[in-house]
Length: 254
Ligand SMILES: [Zn+2]
Image 1 (cartoon, rainbow, N blue to C red):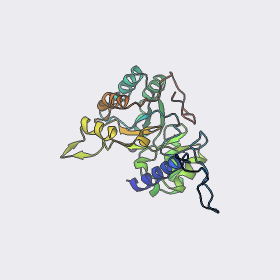
Image 2: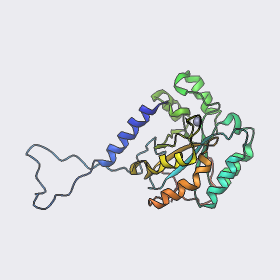
Image 3: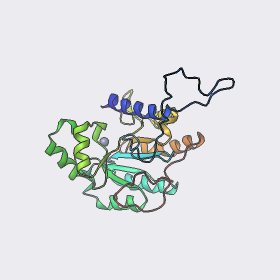
Image 4: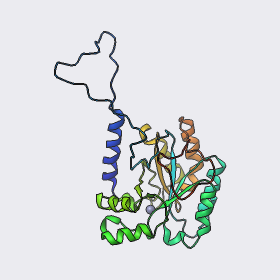
């Protein structure tokens, strides 16, 4: 797992958020800096700043993402898509195309339901271990779109460069539900998944991206995750009807 890399990227993103000028307090002159020391410039995240872990989400809302494939129950994807649509939510599905290509109706149904369906490669390899030619092959034979979620979140400048040449931006996440892990011999529970999301930091939620998988308890946990975050004052990407193959930047979440 590329957890360290992701944490570093996230930390860099957070640093960009927290660097803000403080208003001068009472009795504190505005120009209290010592001579020769300049005030750092105000850094704000703008729509022009694409953050890989936020996938272009600048809306303040939360983007739910569902990865891989529902093994043995392919239509769990579209059932979950219908549920999210019924709650007015637009999600993003990163399907492994080796499976999705056998069910083109699932991709088109998800898009009609108002969800983005994006590239998660053809067969889910660690792209950093492949040759340039094989990286390009995996992306070209993934679901045609304009966002790439590298399997395992593993990417480097070589991967992102090849992806960019093929028209893709990297899209990872700010919250990993760790739904894929086994806890005491069984797959992480709905309540544990909910707990991980609920107790994540504010900055991971605001304009954040939640990672979960179609083959775990995550689809079942979604209704609770939605309720929990609503209670905390967060909204989700709004579903405004059918979408095409491309996810816009900034993401259309409002
Ligand atoms: Zn995956």
